Image (cartoon, rainbow, N blue to C red; front, side):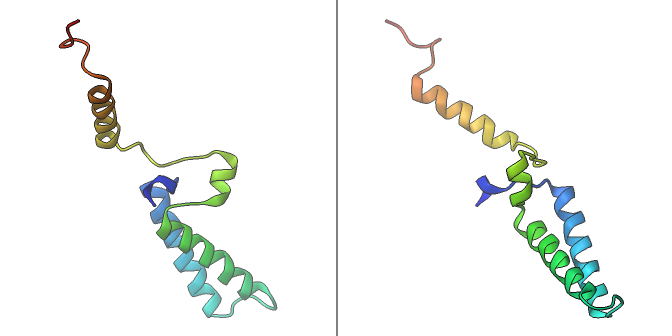
Length: 92
């Protein structure tokens, strides 16, 4: 599931906060008609995308606010080096 994440830490926290706020506002029935339902749906979407860390809309547009994990990229470079052999120690 980590490979599908495209939201950074700060954006996730903001989305969770906005989602909880909109859900709370929809519970107070402050908007007439369909307004509360709209607040609830938008709040749920913001909350769920914040919790999961993946936004399909950002994916479609090509936006990725998640930082690259330096440990993972280092271990990937290391594994590729072992996979192909270290050229400094390889002797013909």
